[in-house]
Length: 193
Image 1 (cartoon, helix red, strand yellow):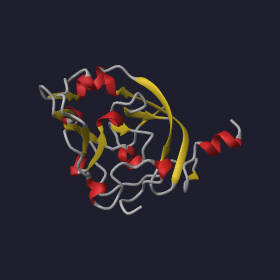
Image 2: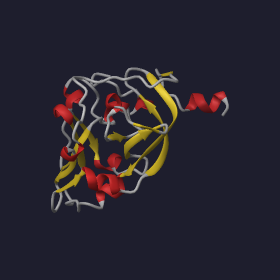
Image 3: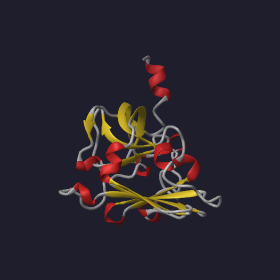
């Protein structure tokens, strides 16, 4: 790949990294008994659904390749993930027509918001492996939402619930000064930008 093409993939204000920095707020959850893990789908759906860990393991996996961009100014190109397509998860529920936004719920009460259209994009998925390796607890094991076209804080680690909502509302970082949307190519880092 030539340098010009690579440069076009790096948003303004970002620096390329070969590593995979670990950033989060609070403690890293560790799971001793995966039978207690599940993923809840709720809110503006005809009927709530819960995907137990055993069922989660049986869902079909796909490979996804993308670039990721962190609000702290690092970008990592050509990531190869294994995960579950959003469309596979959405087969478990039927949305009500007024659903327009999503709140991702993670361990320790951590949340982040997305427009429904961004959640449903073909490039968004629920990641379980990164570059051939099972996600580590620090990177979101067992499931991390991956929304590569937005800053990486929108890719919630330790995912436990997906809530469908009529109106947008801020998640954890958004309540603490981060931008409500987070487009890296528009440098939507903070709400005062």
